[in-house]
Image (cartoon, rainbow, N blue to C red; front, side, top):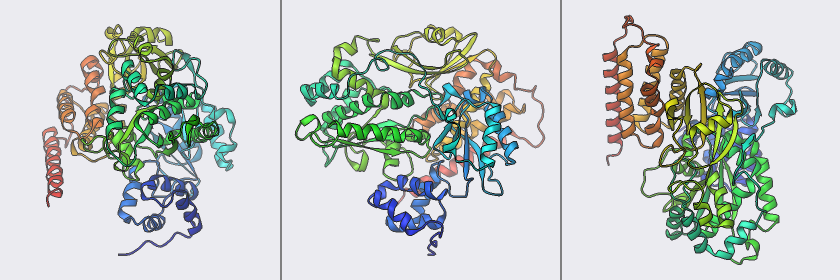
Length: 603
């Protein structure tokens, strides 16, 4: 076998330094690749070969991991790597035209590297800046918000003059919290350590009882009972237990965790530490999405300060045996890693493919040990419950949905930003508060959530009515809901991990149908076929991504069918196109893929 030759541009000394920082542990592969790329600019095959050799991994494994994450580059990219956020709200604010304008100014085609290697420009999924878009990322770590034609012109000039992004105008990278309405989690905060002291006084089981009494459910979307999850993790046998904060906020339209991490990190980290006390963990991790790399320095500073305050580390607050610390694992651009088992796979240096369950992470999670994974907002809630008690929290909201929920509001409204309400709040109340006018629809919970029409604005936020992970995208009557659904379809097809055929093929078939309708070549049969694809994917995919991929499609067809019908032409003939033949070929390809997958599992 031919071993790739070392790359002269990346020295062995550089690699030694990266590997030493991570103790040459194979499960740190994603972090190692990230740091190597930050130094080299991309990941040449010879460098990947060196990494594989030093970690005693196969080159195929290392290349497979590098090829999975969209923020890793196995081919040269521009010195300035410009990624425009491509969420529907960015498009509504003119991001597509701005991307074309920047490409024109810099004389580079979208998705290509300019001949001199200086710049490459393309799109990425939602960057969590929907309340201050259009936005873009430079080299995966510098953000530019509130793009305008004038700012685009200036940006092009700076790139041509090779001005480093760190020297660009500071107001370009200003990310505002934009808290419009605060309640418990966004209101006055307890002093660092206050909740921890209360938790230590109650003891692990006393805290667990309070969490159960509060009826706290996870704020990441699924709504699983936090107390039950912690009980299962605590009771699971293992050599070590882990606490993980899922800060991979990848659902388009969601940015509440960004605000909590930037302005309320103490409450989040204190909640994690309380979780460690309950489940018996000595090590925790914050899995921070790659799009939030600019928060890394801030979070490390908060962790360092808390260690100095004896709120992390050995014998926390003087309690012998209460040892717990937190490290940050930075993601590399993969929406599917928001699913807890895929997140754990990524932490272990693998592709972010969701695991088959059972066993669940609370039984066998990170490195095969019991692991509780909770959302940023969930840990923040834990801090307040530790101080005020479970009965207090349970008295807020509704019987099945206790406490408050933070909403990321964006789209067609006067006051986009962050709003915190008790569960049970009407959709209409949120629209009134954010200054929405002539609203046609609201997408609650992001693309994987539910699309509500005007007749449903009396419904209420809550697990018993309209559950949500936090996104709240507003569309007025000027918007084409077909285009909204098409944008979401492209997102799901792009973010599919490719593990299972129904999702890998199904999301692509949905995109083809919608693109065909957009070109004016569709018929009512295409809409019928979209319904069939929805039913297939909803019941046959490996994880929740594929099952939810058609949610916006189903809702918009049912509630806004004229938006689809206006794209139909009266059965006009498209030369060379045979719908039945195309579907037959797609189904045959799916059957072959399934058969191949079955054969691979045979001894």
